[in-house]
Length: 430
Image (cartoon, rainbow, N blue to C red; front, top):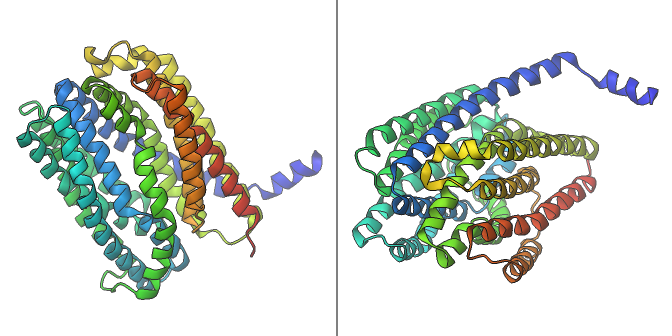
């Protein structure tokens, strides 16, 4: 025991620890503010839109997430992995970014062509007029393309740890969204107005992100065939899982939209606002930890140490969030309004499912940041088996049943990603 304490003391660096505490505190406080603005905007939409309009808004936002996953297909992960190798070379980093943006635009068009007909059908199926359906679809297109460009342009400042400038841009964009929502949704309580108001400020953010990125990555570079092949090799491994994730990752919404009522869709969407707390931590990890994990040398001992440290933080925070939501569920539901009262058990179940997916996602993103991608066949087989089991055992036509189903589906995926991560780290050679 004394030997272990002495080693721990020798490896302890006070200045480094203080620097980390300061960085995490500043970044965390900024993310709380950013996500707080987003949360206020979400509550404003929930309380302003009638239940049927909020259900349409939930369907559109779910499809936006699906389209974004399909359009990315692992490109951002590939750019992060390739950029982590050349992050100190402005010209080479510019080539990686240009190649990623070029690939993403091509996948974005395919994603749009595939997803839009499904969205049109679901919106009309749940009572939207054709005029309202077309309005929502039209409002979704600019939000889709601007969010795709924004997430790609954030890779460079994250790799270079330009966290403060990046957060200034995020704060500005979220303030703009909140201002537009306040101006618009009270006067025009329609789903397409809320979608448009939420998406337009990203145009300003992208202009700022491009200027910030150009300081560290040469934006005059052209796509490179060799880099494209390396990124595309990761896309080919990640795309099948991405396609499957579009179904399984949002399966609660898809199943409830087919088997449940319009009111149930609105309830799932409204309760989901509380899972935004995981977004704060996820953004913090994406800004500080995943890029640093991507830059670590191929030292299995160091990689395992950092992996365990990050996962420990994620598990502890997830447990604390679940406990807090359980303790305050009745009071928190008052924020959503009378339309969503009496859903205390449902909100706790939703947060448990969100915590499981968050822990699983943390392991997944750490692996992919280093270019480690699990065989998609394994992922799909395990997920299909858990989904089939859930459908057989549970009544998924009810809100409570679908939330329990979400927990059951998430657990095998969580175990799979953690086991794979540890296995890859232990097999790493210098």
